[in-house]
Every structure is written in C-alpha cells, then in structure tokens.
Length: 298
Ligand code: PRT
Ligand code: ZN
Image 1 (tube, helix red, strand yellow):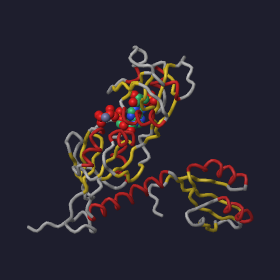
Image 2 (cartoon, rainbow, N blue to C red):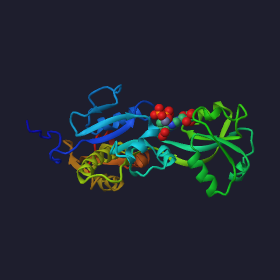
Image 3 (cartoon, rainbow, N blue to C red):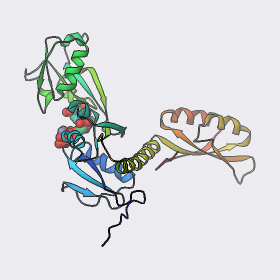
Image 4 (cartoon, helix red, strand yellow):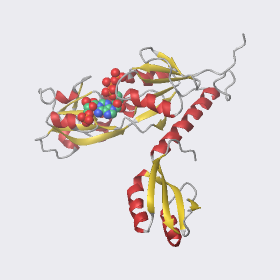
C-alpha cells in the first residue's frame, strides 16, 4: 500500500523531525509542557527511549541532558532542548536556534561565606571544584587568573566544607543550596536557560518542519509575556486611556450599552503591566479585566 503523510500537508512523504529532550530531571516536564502548548501530543510513555506525536511529524527521544549536544551534532537527533550551560560546556558543533524561556539559572563561583572576596583575583592559586571545567577554564583565562580546576560530577557544593576545594563553580537558581552549605555567590559567569539546538546540516524538508515548530514556540512564548486587558472608559477620557495602551496594532474600542461609555480591549506586556494598570485607573478606567493569552500570532 502506498504510504501517504497525513501529518503534514507541507511535507510530501517527508521524514519525521527527531527531537531529543531530557529523559528525567529539571527540564523534562517543561519540555513536554512546551510541546503540548505547541499542540503536539506525545502519545507513549517516557519509559521508552522514544515517543511519537500523533498530530505533528515529530519523534521525541528521551536522553540524559549531557548527551543531547553530541546526538544533535551526529544527527541522531535533528534538534534538542537542553540547557545553554550544557551546550557551552560540551562545545559540540550545533546551532543554538531559540531560547525556550524555562530552566533559568546561572553558573556562578561561590566561596565560603566568611571569606572576604575582593574580586576575581581572589581565585588566583585557589582550588575550584566544578562540573563545568570547560566554561570555568575559559572564564579564568579571559580574566588572567591562574587557578586549579578540580572536576567533580555531583554534590559540588560540599567540596569547600570537606576541604576538597577553596571555591566552587556550579549552577544556582534560588541560592538556597549555597546558603545551606555555608557558601556565598561571588561571581556569576553565565546566565543560562533551556534552548533549542539544531544540527548544522539539515535538509530543506527538516528545516521546514523546524520552522513550523519554531513558529509555534514563538507564539507560545509571546503569549506568556503578554496579557489581554478589557476595561470600561468614559468617552471623555478615551483619548487619554488609549494613549496609555500599546496594543498589537491599536486598541479595540466598542460602545457600551450605557451612553457615554466604551469598552477598550488591548494587549499589555508583562514587564510594564502593573505600572500601566495604575495609570489606567488614575485616568478613569473601570471594571478592568486581565486575561491570559494562550497563543499570540503577530
Ligand atoms: O540525568 P541528567 O544528566 O539528564 O540530569 P542532570 O542531573 O545532569 O540535570 P538536572 O536535571 O539537575 O538539570 C538539568 C538542567 O536544568 C541543567 O543543565 C540546567 O540547565 C537547568 N537548571 C536550572 C539547573 C538548575 N536550575 C539548578 N538549580 N540545574 C541544576 N541546578 C542545581 C545546581 O546544580 C545546584 O545543585 O540545583 C542546585 C542549586 O539550586 P538552588 O535553587 O538551591 O540555587
Ligand atoms: Zn546531566
């Protein structure tokens, strides 16, 4: 029987896109959630090595995060979702395509909390424990600091306490791990979040699928950063209120049943959200409703 590709009208009988995500750990759930928000349902369970989507030509491979850059470089997977920290540490030949907005953390140097940290030269001649020797080495070189790098694979934060090192270089998000181990953050050397990486030699068909996925990811990200706002405004204050609202093009204004009033609809960015709401209230806006946006196509 002749096979037809029912998943994608854009790809005639084409291969599926192969995506590598973390099998379990901090990035797993957010990776699956992002796919779901992109309308991609992964059918079979994660105990398998791979799963297929029923409604997009994609196959998902579940791997250790450290292995994802290599698999993408070797084209075992076409694309991967992985932390920037891992991408830069592994130094594989892959392209970073898009920041994904989750898994945010920083790679930082930390010292004992009672230490008087005077700047990066403090580290000269010291022993630094880390799971990120490549990034740390580059950083020390850039800052002309000679220090000893002691590579360990886990529980880096206990190294100073047991006398294994004078400082550590590790991922930090809330800072509570450092705090609990009597350490303080002294330099932040890399800001990181999950990114999409891709193989450097993909076919035009694969690239077309990636572009479709990217379009969805970008729409989901934009929607998360914006809120839909509805408010009532007296007509004599309309000009002032509209002046406060950016909107995608310009705000929608509809007459209310009550004479002399209008309903105004617009989109607000998360960053200036509260400030604009305060100004809107001061300008006479009433009955302000704020609604999350699921997807935002601009
Ligand atoms: O099994 P596999 O190898 O796949 O997983 P893993 O154990 O190597 O990685 P995992 O799941 O711990 O982390 C995956 C990715 O999540 C990392 O590569 C980062 O990109 C990202 N991420 C975000 C973090 C953190 N935040 C984070 N806080 N990864 C690790 N941590 C650890 C950190 O190492 C330290 O031990 O959390 C502790 C610090 O957290 P706070 O909140 O106490 O500061
Ligand atoms: Zn790992």
